[in-house]
Length: 473
Image (cartoon, rainbow, N blue to C red; front, side, top):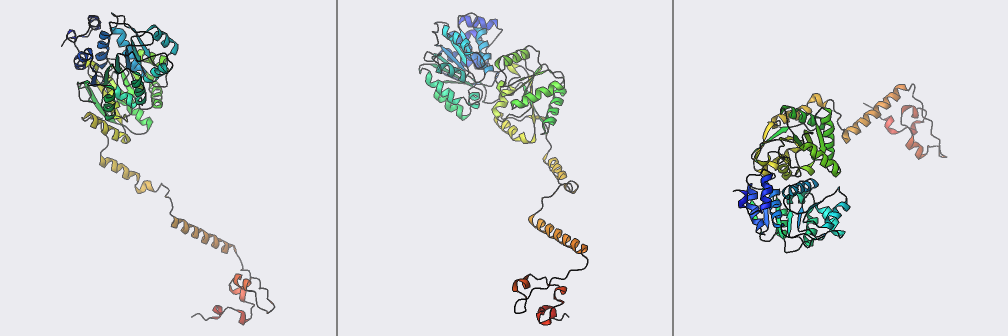
């Protein structure tokens, strides 16, 4: 199928041809005709399959006639991250060169006043993240009741980032007589429920099974030790084994890990830069531009960048951490092997991360080859036995039991008593008890008297205890 058979306008077709596109991808071939017929579309396709163009081109064709009024856009595209919003904005700018369509992006990190000025002049297309869009709407700077086309891009990522309540608020601000295009790489039950709310009798376009990975991506795993310094050493060794790497993205689960990895790789003379959510927008855009231009070889990123990078020629993807959400694995490695190219991905896996790896294999319904496999069960049990062998256990301090403590206390008391007896010379005679008027010692004094031989030496026989007079034989 060629582009001229899809029904796109002449101006859009000229822009597509000027950009060097030859033929549509499967998602474009099936979604664009349905969108041009003003049908709702539910598009399910893996990342890198051309979903962005599948809604950019029909929107530009449908909006050629008419003009937006101030603060009342005609099309709204929601993106989960700033990077994706910038990517979509660039796509619109590229293909709108032959039309008078005006585009504005509403994202964080940019001043409100600048965005308000563009909205006041009238913008046909608004590309926004949910939070910044609601800020403008609540301040009265943006009205959504004139939206004709509504696009939810990367819907599953919206769910992961907690944007479902914001989507429901935005849904209430939109007119009912609108067209909705809903795109996602995966389709968990929550997203299916959300699509039922947003879409009316949609045309479902599935160009690949949900959560599948591109066939051109070689997927591998490497077993890594758990201590962070050892794991970083494993990453550097893995990078060295790949030879000359044109460019690569290294993903980590936490922003703190991204910063530590950047310092570590710089220390070992690797050309790298970090990309994470704590950076301001200008710094993030500058870092991405340097990576695109080849000034940076290794881009170390958190998942904020997993779906926001449109760099066609990324050769390698390394997962320093196994993603805790299996769907994120699909989007991470989807940064390589785009547009039919071949790519390489490798994931470092510790013993603690094995459960996440199993969830990924279940999701993508395929195995992942080990470059450096983990030790088998026998090796792990032998390692465990070594740690508990007598030679090692003798070095360990065993926590004493209650009985042991009592025994030790008794021994210590005996030892102390013997030491006192050794220091004693001649036993002292106990003082004679004071007699009462009857001539006998008091009961308390008798009870407290020390029953040794010297104590009774000067007593008359009738006052000596009977057990001392009993014969022993």
